[in-house]
Image (cartoon, rainbow, N blue to C red; front, side):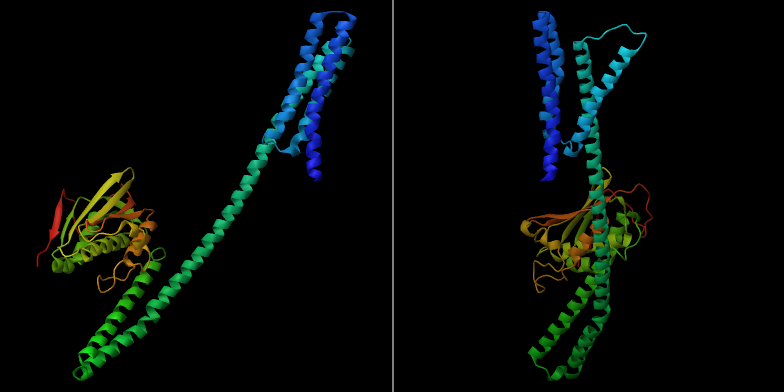
Length: 405
């Protein structure tokens, strides 16, 4: 409450000075008319003396609507009074100077003093604006420092969380694999030793249990790989995507043969990235395109398009497609649109693809409609440096890979 009283008090001083100047102007003009009767002199004195008064009244009403801090109002008043004081000193020195014979009339003195007040007012307002701006910058810097500190803390917590996640994944991969292998081995041992004594249902139950253990082991391995995208990735280098895709197609050769898959491709660029992770990215997308091809033999096309310093790589298939409402959900970890009986997979492949692309500062998305196939696209940064080809693959205008059964 005391701060508001101080603000109101200083806020009223400037228009009060303006009122005093206006009253002085009116009094001087009336005095001029009554004494000498000079109408022109009276009007000129009124204009010259009232103009600073109107300026101060305007500034007094204008200040509360400006960003100027009210705490700087006393400075404005001090500068205004200081302007009058300085002009008064100048007039005094002129009067007492022995070499000056000019005698200033009252009107002239009043006009000069009012001009000094306006000059002081302008300086005060300008300084108050500068101080307000400086204070705002200081507060903004303090806010940025606090934000930066919070971000640093958040990054530290995220790093700690990632370390814990990696530790958990490592423990899951190594510690849980042991009992899973034990379960699988004993089930297979039971099947070998007592297979003749088991009926059809018993044999089927053992097969289900072994298959479930194998799927669990695959999920654990996928979780470990997902958790280590950031921490266990290789340094970025120039990567020839033609060579990467060639290696992937070689690795998937038997799957391509079994499904009569045809892969067509356009020349792919050299990008900046992690060669091992980009190979994993292509392998997951091509493998998914084969798995979700439907009843017809898979037809896959890989293309690339450049926009500035960024490449968009697309893997198109003619498979069963995806509902657009599920386009974002499929990139979530352990998110599946079909049961294990319908389609193979651990539910981690696309989540791993997204994390790999994010590590490369890119985006990944899918364009699809049910029954019309899907196009998975992702962006990577272009690289001007030549890449060494690990497989000897060369870019061609158009090439295809097809192995018939």
